[in-house]
Length: 59
Image (cartoon, rainbow, N blue to C red; front, side, top):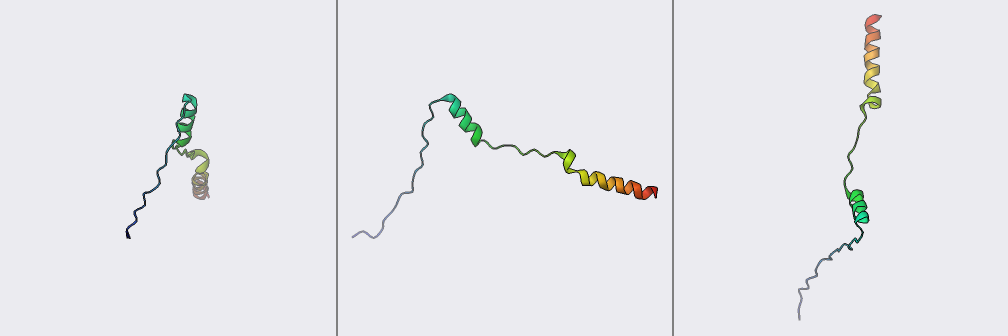
């Protein structure tokens, strides 16, 4: 009687894409997108701190 049972892991296969446009669209969806930070609107607190410091010097 065999007591050692070895199970193989599952294999995942991709279905072939026959249309080049669909293949490119799928690759674009899967590609990582860059993260863009806008510094103009995000640094309003820094600009406000500079204005407050200038007003404090004038007083």
